[in-house]
Image (spheres, rainbow, N blue to C red):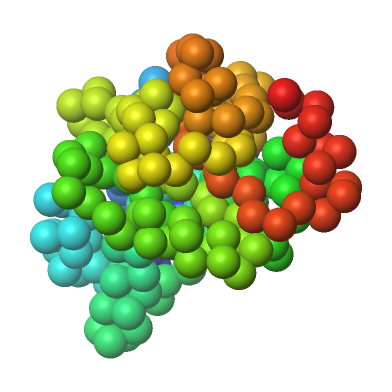
Length: 238
């Protein structure tokens, strides 16, 4: 059996269900490249087992090797947030079912539902987009934002990250990208959303550029048409 296990957004988010499953696993991998969260040492203390740190190459290119291990043994892949938010992990479900290998998903909190901490209603969000590091000629995020705004929908903007090399796009970099593409609207800047260290600030692009956010991961939200309750909630963070 292969288990895809969501770790949530900080160490204490890991569920009792997940801990019970991990105890019976022969090997535990930690997928280390799509997001960040509890440190390797924190996780080792929690699960009391050794953990194999798995980079992109191991998770994506050696998928078949991991599935072969799971054919006769209980194996676990730990994923920050929820295991199916990153599109790469659905491949495990597809390939496991093709190979008749049992697979089980244990879900957890992720950025996708943590954005409700801002007071915005989840069903008012449109398509999610992301801003990459090298974005000088990248226009796709702007198209998503504008299309969402035309429909009155909010836009969650994820920011690029490279945990292996400790490289993270920050809010300032994303705001600079918006300004270069002629977007200077009300924005919600978030860091460590859904954790005890979360910061939420609301203001125009130029206003938020003056603020400093120290914790990662970070993201931006551009609201569309606001319900009056959403307006009341956002006023708390201005």
